[in-house]
Amino acid sequence: KGNEFVARDSLRAVDYLKPCVEAGDSNSQLLMGRLYLNGNNPDNYKKGFRLVKEAAKQGNEKAACDMGILYKYGKGCKLNFDKSRRWFRKALKLGSDKAAYSLGYLYYKGLGTIAQDYSEAVKWFQKSEYPMAVHWLAQCYYFGYGVPKDKSLALQMLQDNKAKNSKILLNYLQTDEAQHQDVQANMKMADTL
Image (cartoon, rainbow, N blue to C red; front, side):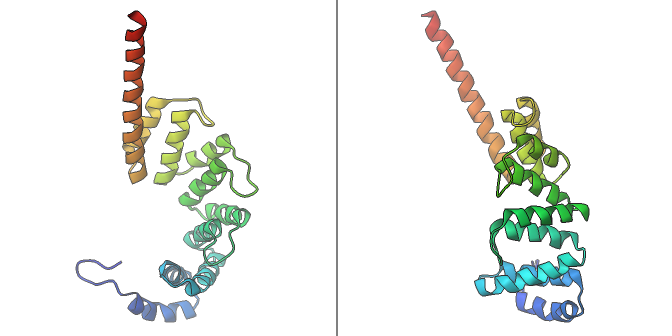
């Protein structure tokens, strides 16, 4: 990342990581894999995928979750939602909070051979404190997807959540709700005329 004291230098990071990657350190494999995957060279995506997979096979929770994400988007591999789900389940067993959210998202959207199932999505979102899990769970409560509709709880969840998406959605829903109330008030006035 770099900071105010040290400039970002991916090439230097690669030099530092190489000996650790060669020694089989899973955290180094994950970091090097992410460097390859986040670059602008699609030829490096497969290298990144292989390194992340090596780290995941060693039981690295973050790497296992990354594997689910890579299969979900087809980055460095063919898109495969079923493999994505399997990797998210492995990551969850290893303790990944993000994996529970990711499983919920697959059910929420009905991706791959997974049928859309809001109740199942809610179950997974509730197991996660990951900010986007809270975001999607709030949407479920707001619209009554898989849970009884509870708009006030949903709005409170969005208000308390640190995800930027939640702030944007909260603003939209509050504006929409105010407009809806104005329309209802105008309709009642029109009925009395």
